[in-house]
Image (cartoon, rainbow over all chains, first blue to last red):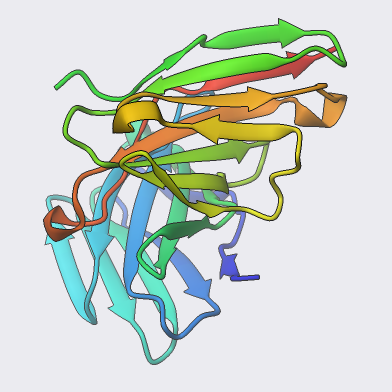
Length: 110
Length: 115
């Protein structure tokens, strides 16, 4: 069974701060990594994908991948109350099967 | 591009009944996935189609579950003889051709309640 681990939280940060969300995975042959945001009662919404080691930035979001450490993270700069949601890490195995973590709940306090 | 759609959005059924859900992927997305999600958990992979071919099926998918994707367009997920443990959100997602990336986009889900 492939494992994708996330701290369930909640992670609480003040408005304007940087939120750091982490994810570890068990299979070294994993190729592709994704972050989704899920509001309560809604379906997951894709935020970012990352395929190679290093950082990838998109607006206030930065994804970081370290394949040697089997670690992927998401940084949210200038956090807003509207960022309060559950953030899901997903890992693609063999290019056809996704495994999701159980998510980290983020609370951004005004 | 209207996004992934699912029907119905909510379904309440009695234990032992059969239910069928429909998913319409984003047009020209050739890959389609079904997931099940329960409270506090991430989506759990059920099955995957590339065009009309079912290429991957979770061992968690018992004989009571079946999925089809005729002609490689919409897909259906059927659950026979429903049990209370089947109560969950059933999510469908689609992905473009692999050379375009592997990002998948989710529909709104079908919430199933088995009484």
